[in-house]
Length: 477
Ligand code: ARG
Image 1 (cartoon, rainbow, N blue to C red):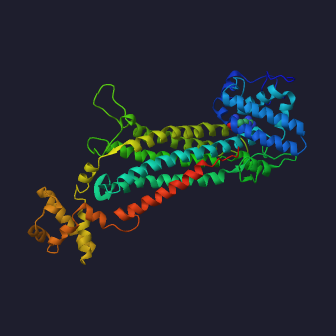
Image 2 (image 1 turned 90 degrees about the vertical axis):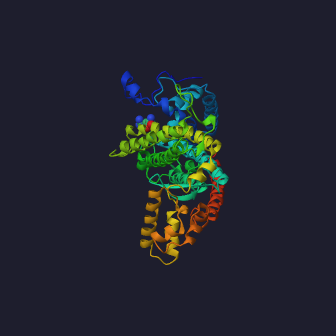
Image 3 (image 1 turned 30 degrees about the vertical axis):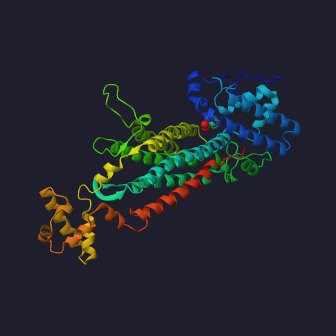
């Protein structure tokens, strides 16, 4: 049945006297990393086979045979029974070999009107659109774990910091939700990216389109794209969709690194705000007492490779002449690495956050430390008509006096208050509690109990909507 030789699997052997030098084959081969696109390449092939049949270039019987063979090949790939060999240059070569092995010369008909240039751009878009949904689901899971901790600590006061110095008391829920908000924006970015990435390059061929009566719009729709590319040169040359996704993953990496850094601080002896579950911490090989926040540190550390991937792809693209150049093959490893890295980090971070114990007692005790209620004094003076400039001065003198005496603000006597400024009367003590400071914050988005509860409810509703988007397949099956 097999009438063609598949010994030479190259897709471009005709005009060459022999195969490439070993060093060239080694440099050129991409199947080691692009094999993960096999399922998407087969989906593209199914759509392309149908379009060839509609164009009269495959008979109905041939189409049925090709579709059967593609399905069988897909099953064999999924089961690991069909694998690329060392001779397969890339995923397209390997799958064409698989088709030739099953169909003989009929397997060679599928290449008509199509080039690896439009194929690879299509495969990568299909793969990354699917990956973006997976990533979105994992991001939403982390956001949900943080939100659940916020729910538990809606009424836990904590020190709020600027410059890593105690600034003003906050609700710990507010701090946790401040890590959720960027993740929600990242989810938004993923969905926006997806809409721009949903363009089908198939039909562009090598760069100029095809003389065969193909139907790119129908192919696009079959593959879950919203439209076919408007320009066949751009279709094979554009890697904006890779760079843009890598920006999103880099930014996610940066967001995770900031969360990771806070957890590292919170779990230190000096802070003691959070204790990690044993399953989400690691020990030391020499110091038996150690319990380290390695998950948080790895989340922080992985930001480097995620940012690096973005820089690598942008630098590769810069100055590339249109249309396709082999440099573009360098887009895949950074993209796959970003997807893989986040797929490793996010579930671990989610588990760590979900299982960590927040020491509400220590947070509450630390909330007023460092004269963090000083702003309340200044605002109290302002409410009594004192210009803020003077209120700030007076409160600053009060703080300096307290610091010299090693006293807290609420420990100053009436006479001592009056000696600092006669406008500081005994009633000022009413604002000198963390609870009153928090309760006074009623404006939307602020750290008071009501606005934080409102924010929590809004975040919970938004997360439920994200579950829907991430569950939708990018490509119809
Ligand atoms: N492995 C190639 C890539 O990733 C596939 C396209 C090759 N096209 C070509 N004309 N050599 O870009």
